[in-house]
Length: 285
Length: 263
Image 1: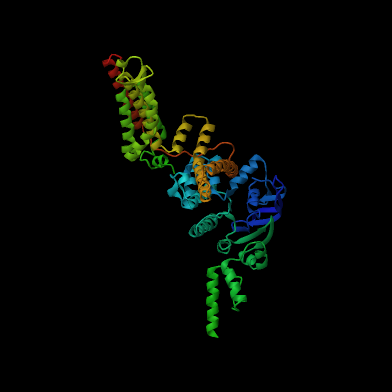
Image 2: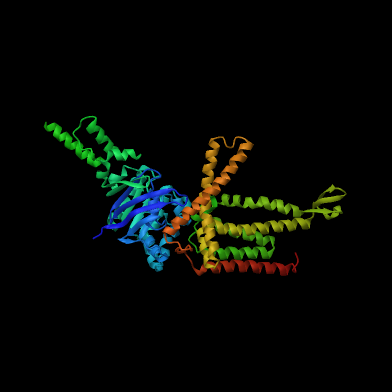
């Protein structure tokens, strides 16, 4: 059984002005998981995402959805975009309506469902995202974080199989980031939707993501679970990224200060367990 | 947020069917223009002002301030009508000599300009009633129901949505320029303003492309279709609109028959 819901095979993408954005990307995104694509600015994350739902067509190579190559006919694309929901980085570029309610309803109405079902889905999406209170507000009076949520609700209302978010945490305050990521995690686990995010916010990756791809200059340089990826310290640093703060701390404690600790730890909770364990061992001695 | 917009969203009449508000405002506007009576114009201003302030919840001082805006233009315009040039000083109430003739006001011209002034103000108050109690989104829904071409309604919707975005961008650019002394002299002000205008154009163009991509990702096929809101709607409002205007019309007819169709 193929558990990859989205796959690319040797995907190349060259822009009209000759800029090569993707140089042979072959990845598989697992169904029902939360996958992160890490990469510095200009690594090609957004370009790859736009290849996922057929906004861009690969210059060469293939994108497969549920094991089948994408059908670029009008009907095929419509079906694909219903199933792969895309949330863009700047919500001001996505929200076209001055009414929150109407904006969220746009995608659903395009699916030509009966009106009652449309209303149910819009209400549902607003509830899941926690923005029911914004329903009657005009779009331009919302804060950036609220706009972001409305943009996500507009896509979620279409009940996609995959939710692709381009830099969902960029520009949010710390509480906003953790709330958003928790919400995405909840959507992923309760609704079984596959979540794909691009980010350069390293610290959220070990906390909320099951699998990571690391991109650099249009190429995929690393992949694996966060634990596996962040043990490749040299590569991570070579491509203008860094370790999660906790991972960095554990590395310093182990190699500079001779603590007997596991340096593949990247989250606060894991570090706490490891330090408690270390203390117990120390006291016993 | 522009304050008219804010009042419209917070109006207690906001949930009322926009079609009903549109019909009421337009009917009263037509009667006000048709009647050409000072008393009717004043009545319309009071009806619309009263509805907006008492029913809609707009603050009275704000409504007055809004009325002041067209008043300034109107005063200037009406002044030219009130002023007469005459050879005979007796025709005028008050006059000054000018190049062998007399410039001044006659009582007929004063009445005429007062009438025009109040009529215009009455019409404006009808429009204020509409715009202070009906958010643009709802008004567009009414236009759609009236069968206005979709392209126009969609354009109006997008323009309205992105006016705020454009203003925000302009504001940011202005501040950034001002911080670097872009407006310290007249010459640099002109230059900064020109740069800002071209930057706004480029940014708008880019944003429109990004918006198109985002719309496409949600299944855009050339038409923006959305769900309509549910509004409070009952016939009472239409009956009220017709009754108020019928009363005004009857009053005008009575007035005209008393004065024998004169004035």
